[in-house]
Amino acid sequence: MSQMHRSADQPTCPSCEEPLESGDLFCGGCGYDLSAVRERPDDHPTLVMHGVGRTEPRAPGTPAASAGPGGPVGGVEWPPATGVDSSGTPVPVHLPEEVPGVDSAGSRLPEHPGDFELPAPAGAVPPAPVAPPAPSAPQPPPVPSADPRRGAAAAPSGVKICVACRAGRVDTDGYCENCGHAQPRERDHMEQELCSVAAVSDRGLRHHRNEDAFAVSSAALPDGSPAVVAVVCDGVSSATRPDEASAAASSSANESLLGALERGTHPQQAMHDAIVAAAEAVNSLAGSVATEHEHHHQNAPACTIVGAVVANGLLVIGWIGDSRAYWVPDDRGGPPARLTEDDSWAAQMVAAGLMSEAEAYADERAHAITGWLGADAYELEPHTASFKPDRPGVVVVCTDGLWNYAEGADEMARALPADAAERPLHAAQVLVGHALDGGGHDNVTVAVVPFAVPPQGAGSA
Image (cartoon, rainbow, N blue to C red; front, side, top):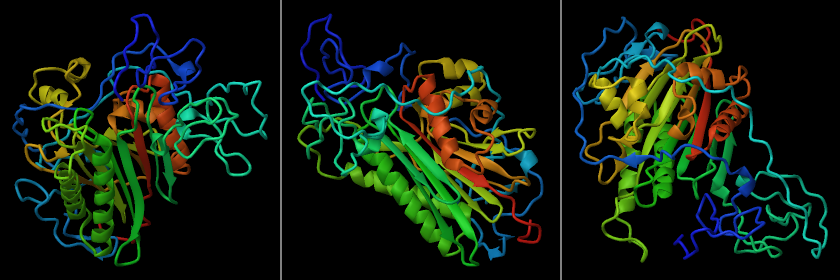
């Protein structure tokens, strides 16, 4: 939205910078709840960092002997997971004591203890204050209170009621017939739950739209056993149409994973191929006809991606960018771990030994990413890692809109409810609430994937 001319002392919406009038409870441009405004630190959106060279991989770790990706897992004869890294060497499966394991280049992922003490999560975001109906408007039947990010509550007749005045009907253009306020878009807050995975995505408190996307699903392997899939993508804010990029990438990766797993492809190879498919989907957006408001010098659509597959006791993670995956055991006496390593300026500084992790992530350049999906990416090199935990736990797959407020593995474990394995949707809602309570400067997306250890004898190690 283009900015309107205004006087220097006229208040503006913190989300879209639309001029406000005295006494406004909600922004007339985007429906933002003005009662939620807080003073917070500067925003850290996901940005592309052009011109940064890749660091050389560190010396590989020494993984313990374990079943390779080509061995039988859970009764399924997986073919060798070839071509999953730049060296052509299949990445071995790792035991729990080796978590966080190695990436697809054979480099051991470092431990990531929490550097900052964050307050304990306060749970889900409380409903926003409800404005009383205008005196001249007819009083409708009572409707439940709603958070403006989650869309307007429906009247008993099925007619949408304005989230601002709670009295007017919403017309077909998305505006209230009583007070004229624009209503939140459907993508501003999304939730999905299957029997064994759940995800939540929220616009946050400062952005004017949600540029994140997710896909969660389940598939049946050739032997009939289930496989669970979660994919999370974060649109690059400095690129054109980042919301379309994340949606295309998550959908394409999910479809590719489901098809490959059902055909019996090894999960690690399936993850690699899914990231390639997601990249092709994002690349195709750059070739579409530009609108009259777009210019040739804009960056091509781009996003980050992180995905997880749980199948017969095997956990496979794949990623490009700075979206992350964490492992949190159900028994909190065991150590949690971060399973991914960022493609970012901060990670490069830490890997090169030039800065500590605390120093690097405190720098204003920390969130400049050096790897992403998009037509102007340097090269496509998906990272993949496989793990074989010996205990039940939960995999948290998220964008930086969450981990900004729970960066270390210990911090993420403290923010995750103890019953996350039994209530994954509730756990995802609590984690989103944790980020919003912390400031909600970015879009927030998280998928929670419970991991159950198969009974002994169900598969070979």
